[in-house]
Length: 298
Image (cartoon, rainbow, N blue to C red; front, top):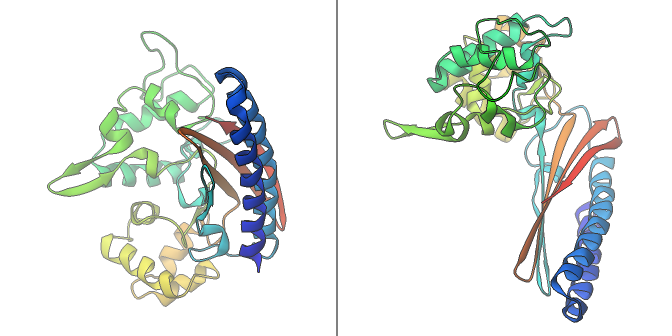
């Protein structure tokens, strides 16, 4: 029933856009695009209402693949297609947590990122470039503070693309690479500046899980993922149900891991005729309430 409600909402929005698109041939290109933008923003408002409807009956205490929010919604329209994808941000690591509220290096997160960089075969010096980009002071912690064309930001990272401004982060490190026939993901698929700093073990990738603790190796990460496919973890102690996970591991990751998510990116792809539009929303869930933090249109 819930999914039907969402489809009806998205479908009704799409019908409005199609109607405008059919009539817009009477206008010039500029006016046509202006009208479509207005209608797309109308779609955006209703899409947020649809997302609120999805989360209204969702248990905020646990999030995992297979729930309504994790399923793509695709609605064909007469002159195009609308696709909505929701991605929780707590499946990622947040580089902003490398520096704490007192502008000091967060040793817990530093060790997590050291493991991640080791797994990805990324030079550890780049990690300190990220730290010096984020921290508020202009003194080097071992990284670069002054660039040829600009200084280090000395504030939190706002978007993943911003990582490309940091010394040492090239295309391979950002996008991923193939080594000895094995694909190693790039930072763009493992990090997010929008998470609350606690990794959701129900949705995190193998690489992120291995980064959380020195005793979570490839085999154990695979075992965690295999277990949660059949039964999501309702609390961190449920990890004990996976052979190889010890109480010590659970204790060590307890401050940086969880079984639920708080922040979600809603990706809305809209195709109208030969034009493609993308809408991005960042929403934050507090219990049953959904708060929109920002939206962008491309």
